[in-house]
Length: 165
Image (tube, rainbow, N blue to C red; front, side, top):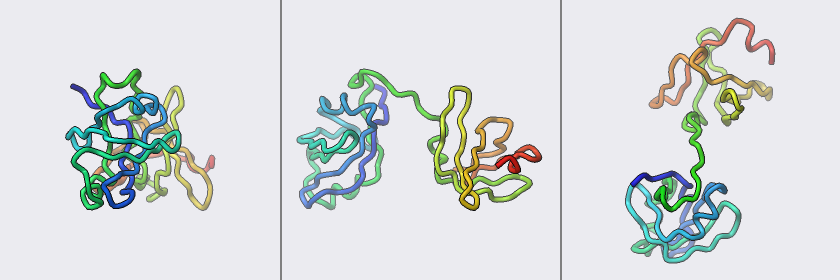
């Protein structure tokens, strides 16, 4: 059984163990029919769900009956069984580096990666320097190292690359 990430538990709601969750809009139609979700590889049966936007809902899970119990699930990714999904969204390989610092070998710290932009041929990291948007291609030529522990992406940009912006 393969599990696919479909969303995230945002925060508790009320005092009876309800959770406010965000579901990727791509999976919302499938989520409406789901009876079970997985958080930290554990199955949770959905007792009730109140879908209040195209990507958020408030749910009640079996055995989660207090705010304190729900609090432990806060911020955790939500998964579904692959067979419960009609279609699977291709994973963005660079999502995990959003928020990382980008550091160039020559110019030093460039800024924080604000988001990843996908184009048909490549992915770009969006950073801002002095309120100017800079788009850095994410490829093996530029990326020297991704340090998950220190949340940094080390790059070596060609001479003159930053002057274009």
